[in-house]
Amino acid sequence: MLAVEVGPLDVAHTRYAISPLGEAMNALRVVAGKQPAGPLRPWAESIAPRYERLLRETPAVEALTTLFRRGGYNADFIHPPPSGPDADFEVELAAVRATPLRQVRAEIARNLVGLRTPPRHVQEILAAPDVLTRLADAIEAAWHALVEPDWPRLRTVLERDLVHRAGHLAMYGWAVALSDLDPRVRWRSEGSDGVIEVRTGRRNEWERHRLGGKGLLLMPTVFGTLISYVEPPWPYALVYPARGVADLLGPPPPQCGGAALARLVGPHRAQVLLALAVPATTTHLVRRLGLSLGAVGGHLAVLRESGLVTRTRTGRSVRYERTPLGTALAGD
Image 1 (cartoon, rainbow, N blue to C red):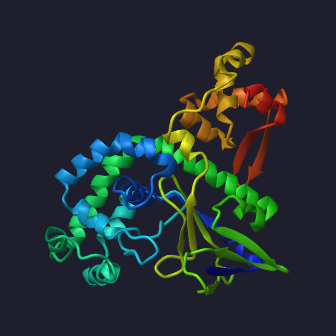
Image 2 (cartoon, rainbow, N blue to C red):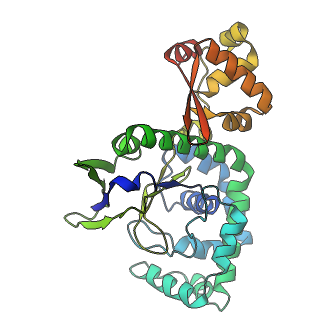
Image 3 (spheres, one colour):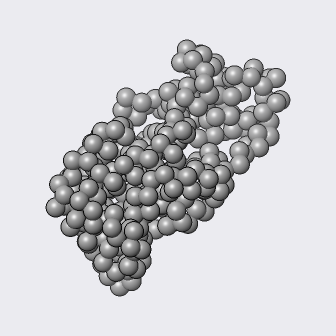
């Protein structure tokens, strides 16, 4: 069990980030069978031919997946912490390529402890003088093959989750913000402070840390599972499954009242209302629907005047969500 003590200053210093490189690593975990696919199974099956081609064209991908493990240490250099809230893949990859070779070899050695001995051709790659270049090239190839084609849609899902999470933390506190993060995470209040408890699978073992006013880094993922970071070079961080992933990558849910709604309020206005099944900002709706910023803003204004949506400001973002009337009209 992991226990992270939280103080009054930690809400203000909590950050949120999206890591394109992290999504490439998590997608590779799923498609390589290193992590259960769960609701992502339709995606994993559809992308399997791309993964097979990736393995043939970039042999170091197999070496990279050899380092993936659950419940144990994973080399940090293949996924450095993002430098900002909306990191760029090329910037993250440059940080990987800049890792000192001595650090690379030390982390690979630590990563391999307790794992089954890899095949000889994988051992040769991991022991090669240019191992860092080979693994960085494998990360880049995985990004281009598995994630980049769908990145605009995936990024929208991640951004919507961050808006949701940040709003709940700012307005309601840790208990509400963490309530639907993951079943293995819970909040325990201790006066003005509290503790974030994470079930790690190690029974009767407690590992305790304190944020100390530094805040927590929260990172949603489309492809990954719950991961906690408590060792440098990472800040204290939780990577957690984003909301709405199954609807995005699996079969699309039926829109029960879509046709009738379009006749009532107009097709584009109906699109906006249906898209707000999950709260979103104007920018998220523009990316998802392919409409202009002015058009989406105009439709939101009419829907708001009609009592079908409301808006909430969180920092510099304005989030829109449906009212109970809007939800009923959308047929959900």
